[in-house]
Length: 114
Image (tube, rainbow, N blue to C red; front, side):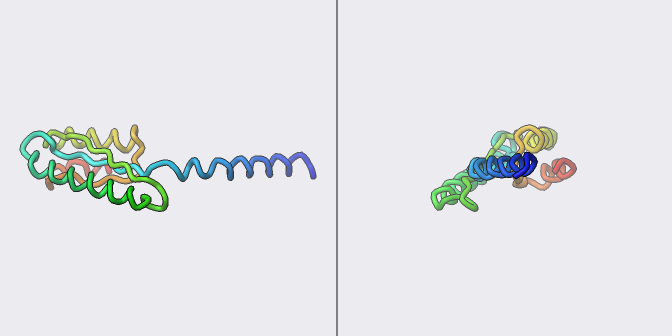
């Protein structure tokens, strides 16, 4: 076996050994909600729904054997704050998915980001 083939096989084996570590990473889902401000009542109910869903999904083994982690940020019922939050969720936190915020006005503000 030549040197190139050995290197290729060893690289492939290291990749296979690392594969479970990648699969163990949680699926991160980001969302902003107006936990304070004029949408706080509805947003707090929505947050409780997300937390319940997260708990129940994870108790059943997650999605594709991966836990789910919902990252909820307070946008203070402000469209510009929400826009900044979604930029952070996508660029810094590297979420896999995003849920839409509460209210059509805030949703409209985040659309260019998402």
